[in-house]
Amino acid sequence: MTSSTASNSPAPAPAAGHASAAPPAALPLTDAGVARIRADFPALAREVNGHPLAYLDSGATAQRPLAVLDAERDFLLSSNAAVHRGAHLMAAEATELFEEARETVARFVGADPDEIVWTSNATEAINLVAYGISNASLGRGGAAAEGFRLGPGDEIVSTEAEHHANLVPWQELAARTGATLRIIPVDDDGVLDLDHLDEIVTERTKLLAFAHVSNVTGAIAPVATLVARARQVGALVVLDACQSVPHASVDLHALDVDFAAFSGHKMLGPTGVGVLYGKQELLDALPPFLTGGSMITTVTLEASEYLPAPQRFEAGTQKVSQSIALAAAVDYLTAVGMDRVAAHEAALGQRLAAGLAAIPGVRLLGPAAGIPRVGLASFDVAGVHSHDVGQFLDDLGVAVRVGHHCAQPLHRRLGVTSSTRASSYLYTTDAEVDRALDAVAKTVAFFGGPEGSAA
Amino acid sequence: MSSSELQSLYQQVILDHSKHPHGKGALSGDTAASSCQINPTCGDEITLELHPGADGTFDRVSWDGSGCAISQASASLLAGLAEDWTPAVLRERIGQFREALRSRGAIEIDEELFEDAAALGGVSRYTARVKCAMLAWVAAEDALTRLDA
Image 1 (cartoon, rainbow over the protein chains, first blue to last red):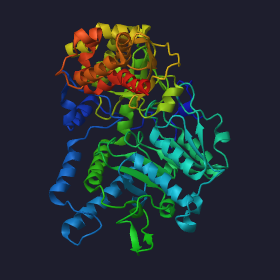
Image 2 (image 1 turned 120 degrees about the vertical axis):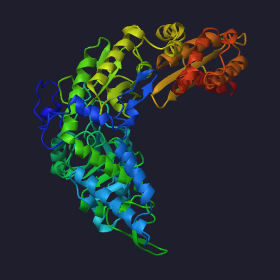
Image 3 (image 1 turned 60 degrees about the vertical axis):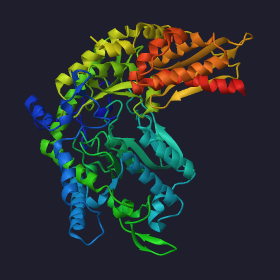
Image 4 (image 1 turned 90 degrees about the vertical axis):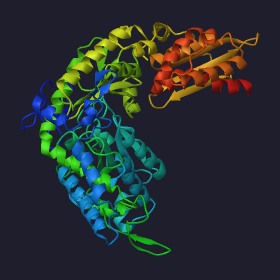
């Protein structure tokens, strides 16, 4: 295992080449800086059940700054039109803004613009890859797509820590192609166990899919180790970057992954827009997933030919205002500085983890306090169901996520059916984390501690 | 410390039933009238068995599963009540219970009919939790259809 996953290492070294919870060189955000940021987010100023809102559910969806709302509205007020068609001025402006948004997002993740495909969400992005491979396996895409073909004897590898969006599409792809799905397990902390990596990722492995950062434990995957093994055996790497790209500086070229997916609404942007990154030569060779208008070169009644990437994956009317607003979100994050965002959240994550671990009756899931994690923490309260914890916290104005967080296998492995997750962002304050910790302690007291069933 | 709304959601009788549930854990598997219901958003699961007796009511209503305080207390309260009900009464009560819970607080649960389970009325103001309180009752509803079959 690499330093970033060594659960017993008290002072792990920063893992090079990917999002790291180690303090970056940039100055962290000050309290005054966070206060200025918060002023840009009107939703954060509301009251909930008679208390000021403490929004600790940004891992599910982030709040949006006025700049993002304004960008979308300004576009709709002045330049709204369909893109890549029409000869009128507004259509030209819309197309230009749409493609500029692609360039902005590409720069943000260290990619080239033609390597960025707009999707509806990250789930669609991962499914796009899965169905492209599926179509290649049916012979679509010709000789260029042969490298994607899967069949009996081939293997797809995912992990026990995945969000369902990075597991179920691979289960389905395996079922459609006859390939076998294999799983990298996690240890008792829910952290990837790479002791048997070389036995799981082998010459038979054609694709390795894993999350950069776990949406449940906040643990950071050792991307370099996993990519190196994939390269040894010639497997493609699909990275679920939903919990990393919004929270840290991520350079997809430097990570050398083949595909990556992330969503707009987790990074201050709108819902309804997500991103698939793919290496240029791979995207150009992958058969399309959704077909129809806007992705073709010539169409006859019998057959059609397709545009190169990214357009070949962008069939039909596009998410124009959403993409432009997402670029505004990227501009906002860039102006703050992703290293500062990451440092701020790493500190919040440690504050959460240490505080939760110190409450009797509370079990912190994932890496122990002191081990790198992003700004989120999931926990189990002995004898109290996560829905009851979440309800009690909501009554005190603290908004958290409850349930299995779309990661049932990981919860099963950790011996719980569900958990409560507090997740932060650049606008989260120490005081909000402390309020959440206080509310959790009160929850334990209210429900009478661990005497009840541990269900 | 907590609001009156929250106190009304988590009344003492609910907390007591969730910690010391009635009819839990005694599944025998020897009745056709059994149903497992899952709440897919949280993974909560309840399996409930109806054991019809010679007198037209139920000898035993048993269940097992895991879930929040609301779902566990609701299953416990249902198991206690339903043992005195006939299948027809149970069917009617499930309908009345559902109507009250879906009323957003407009319809109170009749204490004459539902006894301690009337405490679950506070759930109706929390629309996201109605499905928690309904889980065992939906299992009973489904189990009834198997009893009829």
